[in-house]
Image (cartoon, rainbow, N blue to C red):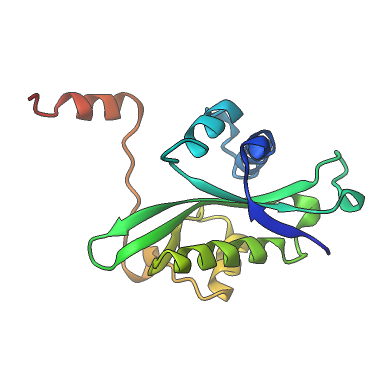
Length: 173
């Protein structure tokens, strides 16, 4: 299938927001999506963006059943390892169901890796739900290592009231 991968623009945020919700539905977590396309526009297309995003686009003649030409996205940002240096973290990789199996996911993943390498990143990290064996197998086939099994890492999160409580414990100047 003919498609192109390009950097997302502010104008893509409605499509990205739509696909974020599609991914959340697939992951059985749609109730957890709180972000809007306006926040994506504000946070990704400002002077110091919090994230970068690539989109996969098909020609008009291959648009989705619903009429969309933006059919996938890769949402990522940069982190830093105190052991290894620059890293890129892939928050989301998503391709609409009807376009899967055409190399779009591989194309998005490879492009994120290329962008990371251009910025001297030494690793690409991501997380996958334990039940999502299709995605885990996809990443493993590309050479990804499951650090949960090999190193025992757990992802830890503070949010909501727990984040507020922690911030309130900070020393005041």
